[in-house]
Image 1 (cartoon, rainbow, N blue to C red):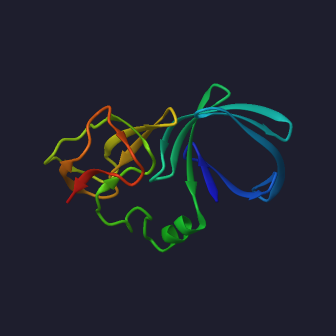
Image 2 (cartoon, one colour):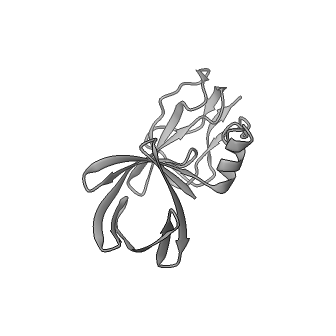
Length: 165
């Protein structure tokens, strides 16, 4: 997997049990979940406090605070890279479909309205899961046909949140 840090630095990362290979070099690590969205990482004897501030799982984009400094991280698998090499964006390969909950959570915000035209990348809904806010974005241009949930509503994984056309 490739991690692109702040849009510039690229790290090739592979997990080997309790070791990481970062750019081909073995790194010893210990990762502990402190509380929802917060982690403590020891990497080669150096301690890092990490907090996930924003998570866009569709586009594999994350905003993480590392020792008090905000860092943007974009993850790319070998399949994402192959599609990029072939000139096809992985999200472009997705067809317009209804927005479903990727995980159970609580609807925090719905910044769109029924009948509204939306563009690829527009935030359709903000879902709180495990005390993290996740922006669910449009995978393609579409029209909001029907909003099936309300702000403050609890939803289950795979529940249809917004119908698109």
